[in-house]
Amino acid sequence: MALLNAAESIDGSLRVVAIGGGTGLSTLLRGLKRYVVTPDRRRGIRIGGAPEAQRPPALPSPSLRCVIRELSAVVTVTDDGGSSGRLREDFKMLPPGDIRNCMVALSEDEHLLSKLFQFRFEHGDLEGHSFGNLFLAALSHITADFAQAVQMSSQILAARGKIFPSTNTNVRLAAQMEDGSVVRGETNITRSKRSSIVELRLEPAMADPMPETLEAIANADLITLGPGSLYTSLITNLLVRGIPEALAASRATKVFVCNLMTQANESLGLTASQHIEKILQHAVGVGAPIFDYALINTGPITAERLEKYAREGQEPIAVGTSSMTAICCGMIMIVWLSVCLLWGWSGWLSCTRQSRGGACRCWDSGC
Image 1 (tube, rainbow, N blue to C red):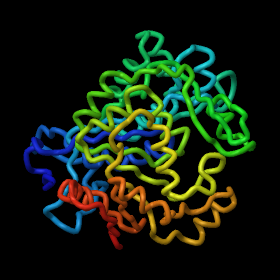
Image 2 (image 1 turned 180 degrees about the vertical axis):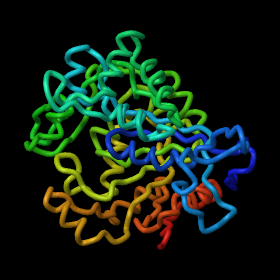
Image 3 (image 1 turned 90 degrees about the vertical axis):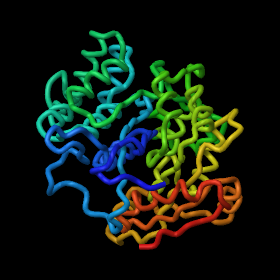
Image 4 (image 1 turned 30 degrees about the horizontal axis):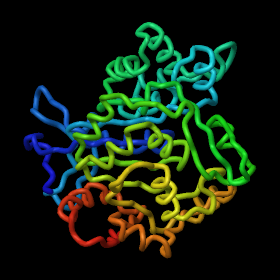
């Protein structure tokens, strides 16, 4: 599929949906935002909102440009710690923290307003709260609709995309552990030292997605899941009734973006193939694949960074080739990515539609 240049019509450009939560999703959105096409009153169409010096570097091939017409984020709403947890408990509202970070990441101008939304009080009764969380709490109370408050706040920040909570239901996480115990609450799950997670579920289980979320998935050209915490940022979204089915039914190119490193209490010791297996195990009742591709890093990581992660008990995620063959033959194409390939996303994206429907294979992007 040929991608459009900035000066061309946006009729053939991409609708992108990014699913996840935490730092991984907001970081991904901050990068994708740079390729969103927006009207420019003086010059017709432009890419990104940053000054010329801050715009994306030229791609190796001038004929390839990742142009996004519509960018949507589906964000998990199970956080119960910190400021989000306090507001959730006091006002019986959905946790605003991850959504606030996504709004700031998509903001047209990440300066004064964005800094204001990220400002965190350090003293008094408001200690620990961010202004953005309090703003969303106030607006949710005024509108009596958290999702509407998110959209209105996004407009104030001039967000270059739409943000949808994965559900408007006030849900909490419960994890069945390997030792048979059940741990409830996202914070408790991430801190648990008992054993590894066997199964994750929502309470209440009958949580429905927003109609706008299902519409965005149905109309998407590209859908990403990850990077992010395996259970508390990724799988949580797939526990919302209707989302796995919508992913399976979508004609979009669907991509799992694997983390670079394992994470304490969620994915220690798991290979990339085991990450995929855990995700598919929780996408119950789906008769078709929810991924077409998996992006997995095989490039070198600096010794300094490895040492930093090692102090936290984390290590690079291995591919897990023994079981990856079975996954690949199950119609997921494995794309090996090197971390130094800065332009690889848009370059790779231009090839995805051309290769769909062909024999399942693995592709090493090189560096």
